[in-house]
Length: 338
Ligand code: AMP
Ligand code: TRP
Image (tube, rainbow, N blue to C red; front, top):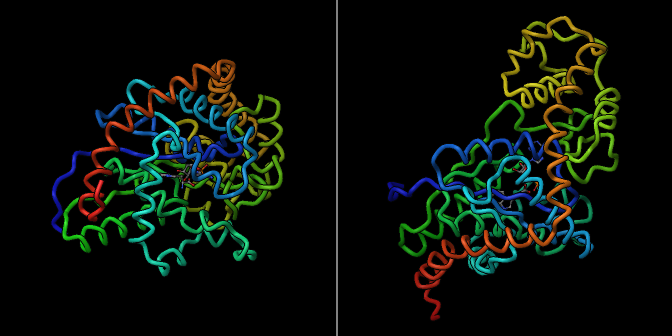
């Protein structure tokens, strides 16, 4: 599609359920901070409406939303330079999502692997919201005419679906209105794996806390988790290619690279031939060095929930100012009288 040129604009979101992990930090938040410095308009959202697609205790949802907001600011998202808010404060997200529910096809939704993973064997009992979730995500992005979406590898399919929704909307209504956004999946750690099982993603919701690093973990906990992380008996190889077929080793090298902000090749150059007795303590030390200033700052921010709420409300006002005219034009195109 030829398409008109859209001003580059960045949007991304993160769920407030279950706290932040090292996967969120390396796969998403680090990239969000980088993009903030590139002269682009950046919009970042704590997606509470996505969280409730699975059961959330209301008090924990409130606390989690503030905690993630604190985590984003502590990691370097500047609420002045970026638009930073929580999703439910801008009702246009839910309104556009409804329109997109009527654009997206059931067949498209049925191909979403995250739904299949999350609903598992008991899909009949999953919420309708969990099934429709990707249409809400498309609304989040397209409500701002965002062109770039920095995410971890697991969200690629959802951003592609967003493009499909934009394209079908534009086609059906004969309007070149929504951009086709690009997923931005960059850096050495776009898919951080579980520390106990290198074939599974590190997630907030895994059964055992030992399988993930939380941003609020203290130094001893971080060291213990890396010490107990599953590995194979071989030392580190002297090429990155030789990590293939060694998922746990590959993951720890990727984590080191992500934290040090270097390539996996550079990590291998430094540690070729090293055993785990040398590599794991070095990794733990680096992780503590990077994460502990962030968790200290997070705790400081979390001690003042009123200030976090004020920042979210202010961010939502700025988001609303961008979103409202785009929603109004969408309604106009669709033929909804307002
Ligand atoms: P979520 O916590 O599921 O809302 O994810 C928020 C962002 O973090 C998304 O961009 C995800 O792709 C990213 N993310 C979550 N877990 C990981 C992981 N294990 N590795 C890399 N990125 C991740
Ligand atoms: N679905 C994303 C996740 O689970 C979170 C998300 C919601 C998002 N809306 C978004 C990410 C818009 C990028 C853009 O991680």
